Image 1 (cartoon, one colour):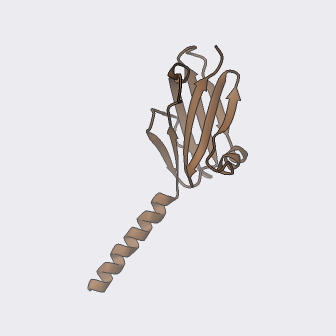
Image 2 (spheres, rainbow, N blue to C red):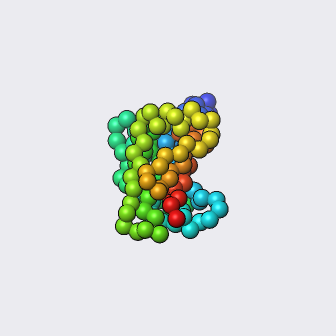
Image 3 (cartoon, rainbow, N blue to C red):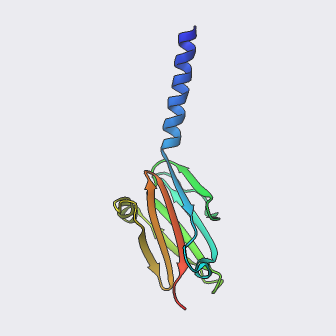
Length: 135
């Protein structure tokens, strides 16, 4: 009976590890330097091959997770300097492949004066920062 209990505990541990290790996580981080240009609201959605999370308000350091491998991100930014003019960054499979291939370095995307920098910090875990560059 003791052997059966040990096998059951090992099985549950392995199952929990496999389920939690196959999640895509996206976290917003602060922009170093002048914080004025990174002030604003941001929402994000993480998509896997089947579904997406709802657009979620992203606060600094709070991760958004979705079970499965990410194949699409939607990230919005509405700069406090010019509220009411949000931009949407749509990152599909080719952009995510470029991020994954960047060896932990930031990959930048821009729309007009808004910049998104995103990097993979470990398999399935991404951090991003958004800011306004025009003055």
